[in-house]
Structures are given as structure tokens and as C-alpha cells.
Image (cartoon, rainbow over all chains, first blue to last red; front, side, top):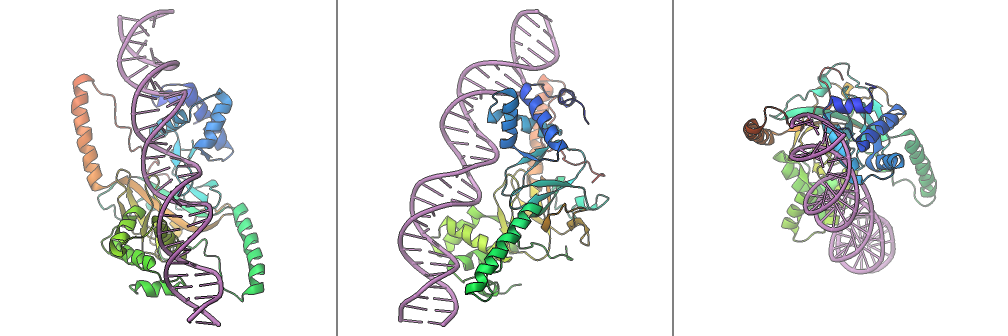
Length: 176
Length: 176
DNA sequence: GCCCAAAACTTGAATGATTCCAGTTTATCG
DNA sequence: CGATAAACTGGAATCATTCAAGTTTTGGGC
């Protein structure tokens, strides 16, 4: 697991290059502080370490590492792609709709059932992706503060109405 | 459920406009044949019915309908956003990595557990999204045909090697 | 150690879904 | 039947990601 970047690259038959080592090590570092970095973010860090690396190279590295299975790609709707080196377990993610902050969560169900579709309709399924959408603590607090301000303002000129149409639950709780 | 578009719009307090009616009805129609349409696709159909409608209007309508909760948005990584009018139940989706074909699947778990993160880390969660990624029957067949051709070609000049690095499972089955 | 073909990387342009903006039209309420 | 806030139009802008053509590097073989 904590093999060196070089070792892991060789293990999956990938050539060992400076950009790849940097990408992998920086992802490890990010991961150890529970960060899920974006490509832009990672590119900055790689350049900070190696001097100058093309954006394309970073994309290429991530593609190579991802399809070799030693890096995992997370593509949250409406937010840039993020990456992590925690692979092999099927943990899920908690993603903030507002800022994109991504946090790992272990699977709620101890066994595999939630990973098996009830009917695969002839598809060859290779991944079950679970994303919990919401607001991170910081953004939730911001939202509450904004709502409070709006309510005070609104109360002056209108009786009720408005009602933040923002995070409309897409599912009704008990009935999956 | 099968209330008229106008009725449903009024029910959620939205103004009734031609574009909105068209969008909602066309989504209903698509849904009844189990289609999950993209914005571009839907815009074509709307124009076909109303003559000329701006792309922006279609986006605006979909945004209004989605946040009012009468339309559901599906944003598959790497594919354009799709929409459906089946809301209120938390069904999931089977999505083809190759062509984006989207198919409904009921939740595998009878009750809610797979919708509750084991730890919410302080987030205010409003949705649990489950996507099963794979290849639809058509694309899977195409893939097999391509692999076969590649194998025949490859066998001529190399012994083994290559091995399609494409759909690398991101999770190991038994261990969620 | 050196060579060379495949694999990586560089640079720069293209793509495409989505969003922003300023101005006009329209639905709804009194 | 106005008034006014909400919708819609047209056109430009954004931004993550991808494509393409050319150059450099890696790693197995001689």
C-alpha cells in the first residue's frame, strides 16, 4: 500500500517518469490529509515540485494511473474531476453541492447488496458509484446565515412566500 | 402523477409558459418510452413543436422544473446531463460508459440503508445518488467484436501482451 | 553502455456543454 | 387593463477537457 511511487508504477507495468512519480506522491500526500484534489490543483503542485509540466501531461498521467487501477477518479456533477489514491475498497463520497468539498465515507451496508443492481438490463456493470450530495458544514452554515438575512429582509415587505428552492431532495426517504 | 403539465406547473407555483409546457410534456413522452433525454435532444424536440425556442430557455425551464422537484436531473460523468420526469421514488441508473445510454433500475436494497451514509461528517445530505457504470448490451457487443479483431491481429505479431486496459473495475466486489 | 521503437511529454488550438449578460416579451395579480 | 416580476432572446464568454503534430525520454535488447 505505502510502496514507493516507483514500485507501484512498475507493479502495474507503467513506465517510471518524473511527472508520474510527482503526481502519485502528491496524490498520496493529499490523501493522507483527506484531500481530494482537482486536476488544476494537482498541476500546480506538480509544477511547484518539478518546475514546469504541461497540463496535458498531468491529464495523461492521471489517465494512465486511473486505468492502471492505482488511482481513483471522482467526477462530481457540476464540479471538476478529483482524484485519490485510496483504491481497492469501494468507499463512497460525500460531496458539497456548493463548494465541491469531497469526503470519504465507508459503505453504509456491510456487504455488497447495494453494489448489485436489482436488474442489469443486459449491461456489463463494472462499477457501482454512490455519491451523497449535500452541503458541507461550512457551506451549510453560510446558507443558514444567508437565509436568515433573507428572512429578515423579506419579513419587512412580504408576509411569507419565497422559500429557498435550493436543495430539493430528489428522493423520498423511506421508499427507495 | 399523470396530471397535465399545466396542473403540475401550477401545483409547484411556477408560471405556465409555452416552453415549460412543451419541455414537461416532451419529457413525459420520452419517459414513457424509457428515454432519458439530453438538453440538446430536448431542445430539438421543443423547437420541433413550438417553432423556435432559445437554448437558454430550455436550460432555464429545466432548472426551474428541477428545483421545483417535478423533474429529475441526471449528470453522468463525462456525458451531457439528462432529465426525466420520474421523481419522488429514489430509483437509480445504469449508464453506458461508451454511449451514455441511461436506464432506470430500482434500488437493490428494499429499504433505505444504502441511502444513509454511515457517517455524514457534518454534511447536510439531501440526496443519495447511485450510478451503476458499465456497457450497454450494444456497446458491450461492439467491444467484444473489437477485442476479437485486435486479438487476431495481435496474435500475428506478438505473443500476448496488450490486454485492453479499458473498463478497470474501481471496486473489489465483496468488500464495500 | 548504446541504440531504437514505443511511450511520454510539449505546445497550441479546438471543442462543447453550460453560463453570463443586457435587453425584450409575457404571465399573473390587483 | 395596467404594472411588475418572471421568462425568454440572442450573442458572447467560460472552462474543463481533448485533439493533433512534433519532440523527448524510457527501458529492453545487442
